[in-house]
Amino acid sequence: MSDTTQTELGSVVSLWRYPVKSMMGEELNATEVTERGLLGDRAYALVDSSDGKVATAKNPRKWPRLFDFRANLIEQARVSAKVLPVRITLPNGTTITSDDNDLNQILSKALDRQVTFGTAQRAAVNAEEYWPDMEGLDHRDTVTDFTLPEETFFDCAMVHLLTTATLDRLRELYPQGRFDVRRFRPNIVVQLVSGEKSFAENVWVGHTLAIGDQVRLNITGPCGRCVMTTLAQGDLPKDPGILRTAAQHNQVNVGVYASVVRGGAIRRSDRVRMEKRDRA
Image (cartoon, rainbow, N blue to C red; front, side, top):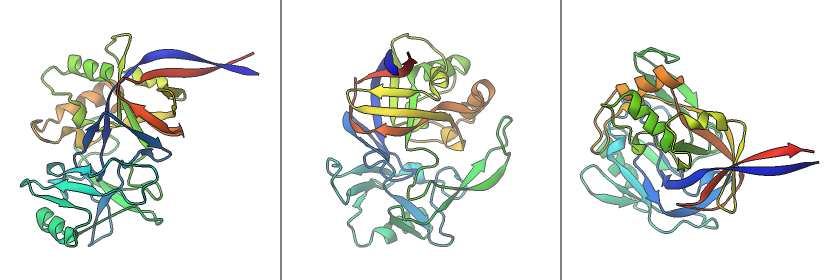
């Protein structure tokens, strides 16, 4: 027999969804969490027509402009919806939607590479990752292939969490770097009640987090970072020091991955607690 106890960790301070893989996304006040993460997250991607690989900013040599595009859902997402219409803002400010007949042609011209816009299919798909020449990475100055989880456009897990404590610690370690949330593309950002500056999420691995009244997430592992964190986007400059700092001080990890134990509504300001089972 066992009882569950909860330890207060903090609260949700921001929520993020990225409807099209590797494009800029949208900040939310509230949304639904499903077994596939935040509703509408990575619902779409671009596929290179020449090799069938998914377009990702993990290989900026091949896809140097993806961060210049922004995507948001046109309507409030509903779990029951079969289709989630998306609006894409191009680098020149022009907007197009997923319903446009010439969508593929417009995106191909903007990217100077033939692409197809779509949802994830049953067959496994691959993407490419460029590893900069930097100490602490698994590879150096090379491009490797990786396979996405079946029927998704996620790199690894369905949900990514990050604490402001980790961002504050990274700023201490590398004051000249701009450790903005946007560089790390989390879904859920948590502010701790402790006010500490540390890689606080590391100790969450293997535990369950309760968020709000409904959502339960199982923290499955640390989130290893890549070249994407160093890229320029919006007003953020290119900065290899961002990734180098994570490599030097936290084994290249920033934040944690999670699977969904139980979905439901999630909102900014929701309480975040760690659950532990006490055996009697």
